[in-house]
Length: 172
Image (cartoon, rainbow, N blue to C red; front, side):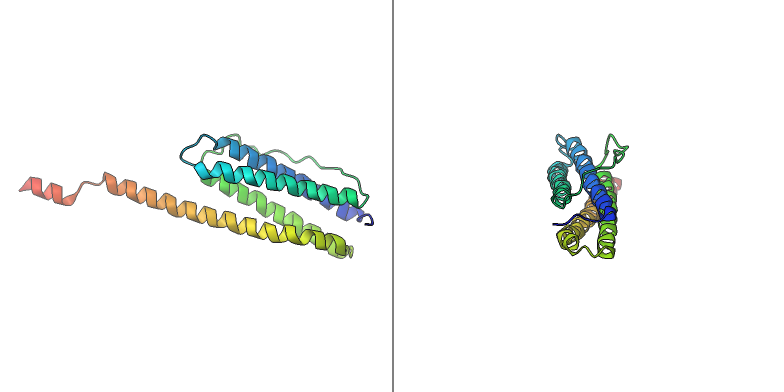
């Protein structure tokens, strides 16, 4: 493989760094829900995603090194969230991260196309496809979570209402 252009190299380094950043955020989220009986599915999901994103970051770095370019990862500020509070907050933040990664991948694709780098375009294709699936999955999870949350609230409010028949019988 021949070296990628300087612009593509910078963009690949940024994508790799952001993948690793997301991996760390997912790991933080997973640790918040390990012992949370109310949110049992989140820990496993976030832990799996942390591994996937870490592997993606490594694949971009291997591609860069394989082309003879150097690794120069930019520093990305860690999330300012120490406690994710609820599962929905973590999912919504994860969606923000994934949307930002999508934009970085699209920008990299545009840069690769402008530099006629077909090898990079082919390499990126599966990451773009996976990214679309990840975003769709998170969007579906958020919608499902809101539906379940609404159902629980409705059940809770129904359980707190006095039964009309009981009140009527007592009056007679």
